[in-house]
Figure 1 (tube, one colour):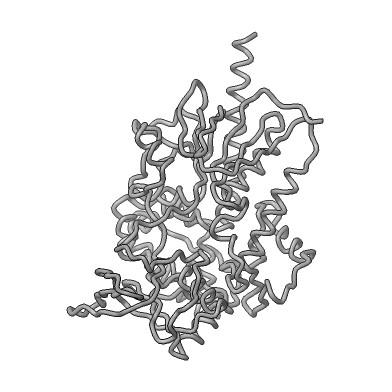
Figure 2 (cartoon, rainbow, N blue to C red; figure 1 turned 90 degrees about the vertical axis):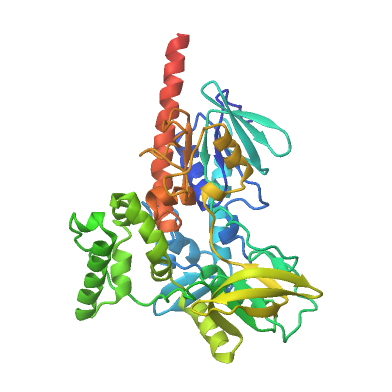
Length: 468
């Protein structure tokens, strides 16, 4: 029989990759203190990214670089070798490398979580709470955590691992459907388009899912620049370029360094992808070194181009898109949505094409919003709004994520990090920029767990001394 500890747990809010890995590391670093992993959806260790059951939804990172542990780079590859599922259905071998389905990666993370739950010990080290956290109220040295069902828990601290926030909704329509949902496609007309707002990786996944589910009609995808993600190809290791101090403070100068390096690589027979990949280890430092005005310039003028080169499609996903475009099943348009007017059986959408004065009106039978993620400054997330209302958190200078200290402790409205509250993953976009892919998050999760464990140990030691 397991004995219950008297120490309050540390809460991890969100059980996607970021939260799951933080919880796993914490449960091993703090065997005397439980970890409470909270998830509002029906599936732990998956989040939106890995909950899909579509075998054509592939990871956009090679399987060889998808280990959950920074110190065990072959962990996922070895797990794949022993996986009982049909490899031909859930993995794709290409000249650019092996790519696994995202749903399969979700199973990998679930196995890690189940293994941790089954570990023997005098007390449960990891506890799961399948409910939405709607409030964190300061109490003494920790928080009172409130769940949507009304239950309350005392916790010693919390890690906000909420994942990607939903972007603000555009014009409303009753024909809008969730890109990750299973909305019925019955009675869909084969002659009327389905509109996807956005042309990035979410659009790529949506097209694959629609065709796998038998949607026969034309698909129209629109975005302001009409850019598609680039495609993975075989690459060679390339050293990160040397960046002069002046270029670290100027976006145009930094871009010249990257372009010059790509030309140098091409002259040596290497691909531009090798240069982009070489920046992974230095990109956070480069981002943090740019003045705020240069960071804002990047977001306005460069971000879309960086994203399509940095976050690339697996070759099989690119083949689906190319086949659809060649057959006329998928049309890309540089445009933005001006208005939506619901009609009987369809929506009438007004589009403003780039460089064209007159609006274009199209009738569509469904609308999928794949326009990207939201900003903390604009979020309607209940927990984050309440924490901001209490002054416990604040947006970063760009409004993308949360303002944090160097140890990822969240800063309050006064710019202080006095409370035991940290964040991880996409909520660090404004601070780190590279914080959404597994190769970036896994190291950050391990380091944050060490920071949190040390902080709580110091607090417990201080309390014990006061008691003595």
